[in-house]
Length: 109
Ligand SMILES: [Zn+2]
Ligand SMILES: [Zn+2]
Image (cartoon, rainbow, N blue to C red; front, side, top):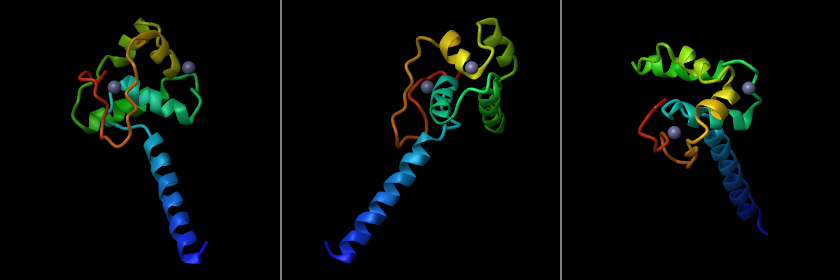
């Protein structure tokens, strides 16, 4: 294999890796369960609602009201991020299709 070709392939692989990493990052415009699904692929639940609160911060920036969310989640058994997925949104299939800005769920929470 020629050096030039090898360099092109190496660059392509590098690009692919970067895209995969980027795609695993949670998307702030996703609905809450999709956001959590993505975020929890890359890290462990820390036993709190840290990621949920992170998502709330993103919504606040976008002017969406999320008041009472924590109370709503806790009342349904979501005391940490993974419990939110297990107990509050057990039926919502995550939409993790790459290359889009947000999931296909009309609801955002
Ligand atoms: Zn979604
Ligand atoms: Zn948890």
